[in-house]
Image (cartoon, rainbow, N blue to C red; front, side, top):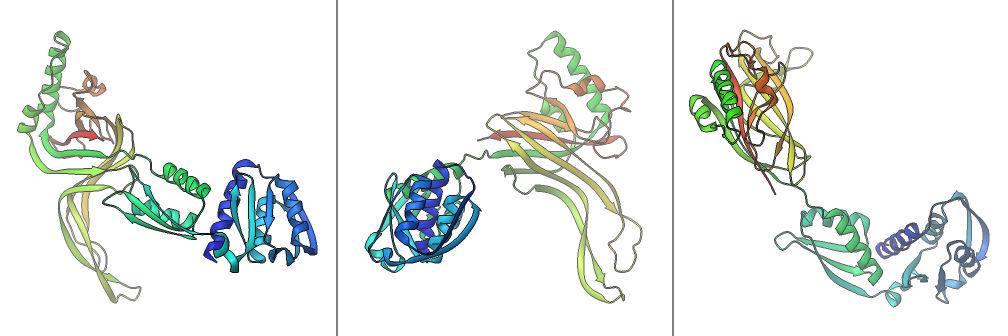
Length: 366
């Protein structure tokens, strides 16, 4: 059965590539296989050569408004026949029980350059169920064993090429700080004025970071579409889970504290769009029996675009969202024009009085 599936997939893949789909009808009853093959030969402009014992089969089928290649696949499946591509437009047909006479076992090693060989191997097993695929992640190779032709080897290579795409890896180093909003406003306003006179002047991140209180930090590697990563300074409280009758059925935990999450939305070799979310909360007050403990706090998130090699200072200058306050990649961030020295317009990422939460981030993409 596995050989039958393999040969079906190979021929149908070939037919779909060179022939567009269109309506096809076939109605036969106890018709010799040779006559049925003549119908498909004319319809698909292909040559079919059947083994003598296969020619003895009588075919009965009633198929309407179908693709010709799909109709051929269905007829072959129901009559336990196999295919093998002999030339570019010629296929041999034989009984599945005689497949060893027409197909020889082969082995081949395929190279994977960018992606996880095991992941690609699992996809190939679905596309080519008649072939065994064994991945070697350390060498980036996939060993294949089964009955396949040179054409099928080519098709498998093309399939691997379409799957083996280079996925950018985003290396993110970031640290969460609490810094005086007034100090940030005064520092950036002062630097903005000096930069007008000296465009080559570089912003001194270290001076600002030394002034702040480090909450938490992390170094992570992210890929587009992967789960978010988080760094946190938080505490958890266990509470009971109850059913509708008030009976305890389990326990759960509620977490409060300073939690910074990052997730890559998209990336290429030059830049990455990163979804940052920041939560600052604390437990306070009582809670109902069987319910999570009450907590107070804020949570905001924004998508920030960072270029490869960029160092950025991210804060909540705009109400309700995070944004780049300053970057070594941009001579003047938009946020500088919105600053006020009195600090009142320098909104913190999470409301915390005179101090605001700010993120220092460095990005490298490979």
